[in-house]
Each structure stands twice: as C-alpha cells, then as structure tokens.
Length: 522
Image 1 (cartoon, rainbow, N blue to C red):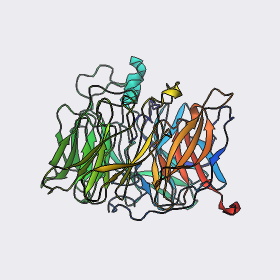
Image 2 (cartoon, one colour):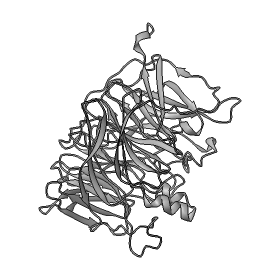
Image 3 (cartoon, rainbow, N blue to C red):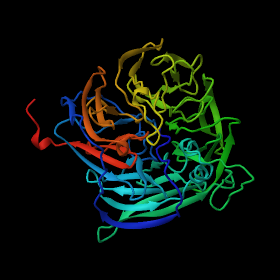
Image 4 (tube, rainbow, N blue to C red):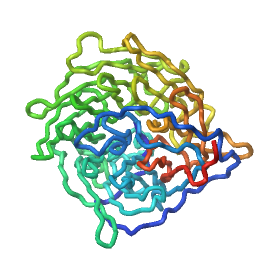
C-alpha cells in the first residue's frame, strides 16, 4: 500500500495542459562516500504463472501501483540484474515536492504517473528510461493540504490517502481515478500529427450528492457537514467501478448509465486500496476484511467478513489503528493481509471463495521482533508464497532523523500444500523502511529500497536492493543517491515492460536498468 507519499500537494485548478517533450531536471544528491555497488550481478531464476487479467484494466504488471487487480506486486518483465547499472533521475516539479508516487504503463511502455508538488497533484506522461516529460494533466488539490497548513498539523496530510493515488489504467490506457472533488474521471492520452502528446478528459461522474464533500478548504473555512474523501477505485469483472471512502462508504458506479449505489460500514475507516478477481471485491477496513459482490441493483453486498486484532493504538508510522496492508490475492483461493496486534503483527491467510464452509483462516503468523513489528505496505504474493517487509521505526522523509530506529526485517512465508498452516521459509535482516516491494517473475528477484550509513557523511545513502526470492540472500545493491531527495517516502518500485526499475522519491522519480552492451563474462 502507499499512504503518505503525496503529502506535498497544495492548491491547483483542474485543467488539461499539453507540453512539448522536456528533458528531466535531475535530482540533487547529498555527499556520497558509500560504494556505488554492493554484491554481484544476478543469474535469472524465473517463476511461472501470473494472476488472471481483468478485462476492464490494462494487462498484468501495468495497471495499478500494485501491478494488477490482485495486488500481487509481481511484474512479468525481467528487472535489473545488476549488470553495469545505468540510472536517470527526474524532479517531478520545479516547486517543492515533486514525488511521482504511482506509476503505470501504457501499451507503448510509456509511464503514466501521478506526481505531486506544493501546488497540487498532476498526471504526467513520461518517456521510458529518459523520463522526458511528454504531457501533464493537473488535478484539484486535496482539502487536507489546506487543513494541515491552517492547523499546522502535518499528520492531517500524512493520514490522507485520497486524491488519486489509488487509480487504475483501464484496457484502453485511460486513467480512472477519484479526485478530491468526489468526481470519478476517465482520462486518456493521444499523440497528434506533430508527435506531441496530450491528456484528454473523456468522462466524469460527480459523486458529491452520494459522498459528503463539505470539507475545510480555501473557499470553505467553516464547514458544517461531513467530509469523506474517496480513497480508491477499481473495476470488478463486470465493469462496474467500485469506490471506497476514508470513513467506510463503499459503492459502485455503472459507467454505462451513471448509476451510483452505496453502503456504509459504521465506525470503520478504509485507508488501503482494495483487490478484485473474477468473483468478488476484497476490502480491508481498520476492523475487518470483507468480500463483496454487486447485487441485482448494483449495490454492494457482503459475501463474508473476517475481523482481526486491531491492537490498542495506532503505531508510529501507521496511518490508523488497523491493518496497514492492501489485500493481496494469491492464486484462485487465498487472500492475505496483516493485523495490527500490539506486540507482533500477524500475517493472516484466508480462503476467499464465497461458498467455502468452515474456518477460513489458514494461518496467523507472528512477524518480526516483539514491540518492533509493523508494516504499512502490500505484500508480494506468488505461487504459495508471500514476501513482507517490516516498516517499524520509519515515519516519513520530511521528519525522519533516527535511522537506527528502523529495525528492518524481510520474511517469506509459504502456505502449506495441505492448508494446515504456513511456514516462515526465510527471514532477512535487511531494512526496507517504506518501499512497496516488487518481484520480477522473469528473474526471481524481489526488489526493495534500502539505505546504508555513510562514513564521514551526515546523510544516509539509498540503494535499490535485490533479494533472491527463493533463498532470501541479498544479491546486490545499486546506489541511487544520498539525502532527503532520494528517500522514497512510501512510494512503490515499478518494473517497466523493458525491464527498467522505477522508484518514486520525495522529489521525483528515478530509473535503473542494465547496460547489457558491456556485460562481463560470468
């Protein structure tokens, strides 16, 4: 899951803007004393299989920040092997901020990214590897930015996942997102005869009559009613666009006729994205995991519900008192999330079929060290395996100073064939403070973003790190830069069709790929 990555958005007007190709302005690194490369190049160990595609979304690996509707966090392309690694960086804005936190890929392999700055969110179309800006589309600012400024409370922004980060790319390469005005929009991009690209608003649906939008903002200093921002959208297998709000509203939009239906989970929050398969929609609130399906009138109906241990309080670095994970679907039968238990969070694996009878819970696996256990990101899910990182001790790029407080830990848990439980296959002591990790099924590497202290330098150095998903062994680390601008601040790693790894950072985005032209003999 991604949460606080887009916290620097302020005010903006909704508009379409075309831009000629622009060369990237590079990120600025602090002093570097750490080695540029640690480890050795990897040998591919591919995995087979991938989740089923949703016909209303772009193909697997390309459609969401978590790769697909299953939130598998698996990419089919072969990511970097650490062979003569090359890197390009780009600042996402000339203003403060600039993080490009969500990245998807169109049919041509171009990046469709959601980026933020001090003056608001925008969609950006970027060329692969070079990160040249091809087009941009500005979005309205979130009320939380104004509220945080007036109340001088940055946590208001950090705990807001609305504004568009949980968008998806549809089967026609169009962005579908809910903006901060409670409007679901569908935005395409096209190229003219001169070769210039532009974004185009194709459809919009106003949900403000169904979802309260009386929010404190520049033009509304003293709201008298409820403000409940839409946090995520995703289509089900019939093409209905499902949406969820921060304060527990769940609904559907029929894009063919504009019909809107909804329900509410009383006294529950939804701050994560959700997942979909051919049979249902799966949603995690701060109290429970739900499986839902649209009824005859398109209203959400609960198929099953499983509560979990939400602990006694919100943990440091967490967004609320509940699960920090977007639900991950594994194969045709399983769903995995974590709870928020006090001493150690637990990895929970359930049977997800609607007609399953008996105890759905297959296993509850305690994770990491007592009192130092927390995750705020989605897991990698493939085969019968789950890979999860420990985010305990990290806050955000703007505030974090004590790097010794980041305790680290990455584990792989496997579901037993007989479903009698789960086993921890390996645990690495490596630290991945906030990244949404990804697995390349083509090479068997799990990618994370880590840091290393630097001798004689104040700032830590940041690295793209690859672990062998089979053994948990650290294969290599590629240095990206040092200092705050290179802190990824809860953004995901995304692997493009050409094998380039993209990482959102506090001030922009970076691209890393292998230079195979000068590959050494191995």
